[in-house]
Length: 368
Ligand SMILES: [Zn+2]
Image 1 (cartoon, rainbow, N blue to C red):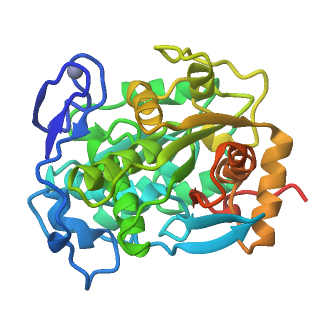
Image 2: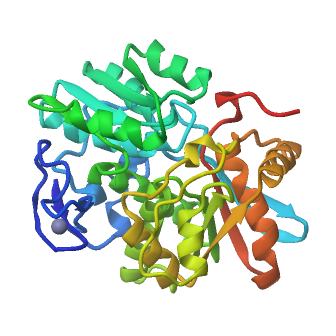
């Protein structure tokens, strides 16, 4: 696949050994063609309806577990026009499958043997499942505090679970140090094919809304790959003249660990590494400084969006309020509720809000 560095503009064919640019930045997929609706395969209700737009050199994936084409559920929430997109209705119960399904096909094409990632749980589960399906070995590094349910989910797919003491970043360093030869770093934070897969949510929403885009996209941010992928996907629709404007992107983080929120609130040029005083219930968002922070800030600012943080009580309340609508999201996912309640004050009454629900409530135990 063709990749480009968004910082130094180095570009070329992706090599699995060079999982990031020499300058240290994460690769991004190159938009090799303009989004053309005629390229969609309408008979395919999954990610691969966009196979020609992915333009990876193959139309049929080697490996599929049927990710993508999640429902779009309209709801009136306190008078607001809201669409929920339960991304947890996916092969391993989180939005990560959208990226992993594209990534694993690129890795299989490159004939790697072992894939490595660090994860608080959901990305590790997703990669473990797809590796099993592809006949690859998976080596997953998790922080010691990751939930038992998530560790067990990774293990049952046959992956090696390495529980690493310390903070989340220690798991990342352990993963990076373990790769070499045909054992490659298949990081959801770094891999450009993962980002490409995430773009598909924007295209799906545009199709499901009858050729329209929402006014607001409210999304939890850990590594921020869902945010960035969606923004890039909407941008491609805008550049193709299919929508007038990209939705305003709202990044949501727990107050206990909010590096993006701080940068946006202080209009900072850089994101400073955050240090949590205690762990948040939103364990999937425990990222002190996202790998792609530069582009995340750009996406929020260019879209006219913002960043909002929520308290632990607001996270619990969000999980319960979503459940009252029949939607069971994990705490890392339920943060969007509190953000919706705050952003409504700055919104037009006719605005349309899109809230992806990124992870299943079944991933952990709710506080009742
Ligand atoms: Zn670079």
